[in-house]
Amino acid sequence: MGMKMIFRWYTKANGIDLGYIRQIPGVTGIAGELPNEVGEIWKLEDILALKRQVEEYGLEMEVIESVKVHEDIKLGRKSRDLYINNYIETIRNLGKAGIKVVCYDFMPVFDWMRTETERRLPDGSTVLAYDHEVIKRTDPLRGDFALCDWEMVYSQKELKDLIESYEDVGQEGLWRNLEYFLKAVIPEAEKAGVRMAMHPDDPCWPVFGLPRIITNEENIDRFLAIEDSPYNALTFCTGSMGCTADNDLPRLIGKYASADRIAFGHVRNVKRLSGRSFEESAHFSKAGSLNMVEIMKAYIDAGYQGYIRPDHGRRIWGEKGGAGYGLYDRALGAMYLTGIWEALEK
Image 1: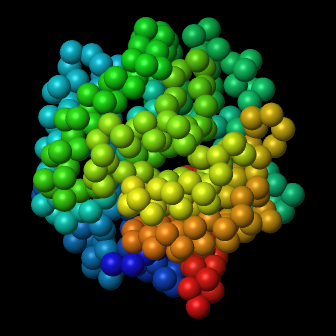
Image 2: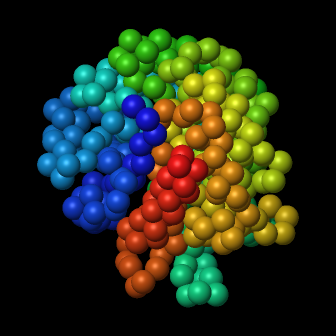
């Protein structure tokens, strides 16, 4: 199929017209989602309706992002079998609708963490940012938690209870619960023709003492070995993995893409600051700490046959809407990456 450039699209949150996405040269499809409650079965008719909506604009929808994993599965609670069965039924329905890849993650409580959503850069744009010093002096168990709207997702009591529950699980307990999940889901995903693409932890280290396990080469190798199948694959996110210089991104992309264990690529830049702090940036290599030419070359040299999308963008040109997921800067990112890709191929 070759490498395909796609674009993340939310049905409600951003209000970005599919017709605008179609106008980005080189973008052939979207990574879609349904705004269902976590743990619910996605109905086949709802998936097909979304797919028809996308296809009316001449775009494909072969990737879904994300079918979220219920916290009870991550915690290994008694109710996990119910939620795993619902998850498998959703994967079957996605397969019937022609979906090829599902991006998901296994991060406890927070599927990403930032301390600012509108840090202003010298050029006047705003970005998502993470200040590790703010994290160190924040104690969600004490009630002083107010980071990036997570207090709107959980009540204070829910947050406290969840974090305390993970203290009992620990890192090895989370690995065991991930293995239980994968052993149940991957064989069914393979039957459905849907590749499960795990997204790394963002950022790729523990936050508030919560275990994080998809963080580096050693842990990714351990994850992929649980089910040694191309259907147990990665969403390789350069922004998440690139938060630390310890991860050699081009080498890792070459390693996992050559082994057919990357099903989806999130390609974005990030500017590493002192300590573990960082801020997001334009995709342009010089805007951040990552060499985007080396990253795209690694995909091409590995003969990658899969989906790529520009990831988080700056908020620019007076655009309103969700931080990280506006239209303009992600469109610039798509064109920048496509330009690198074309130049390298030719």
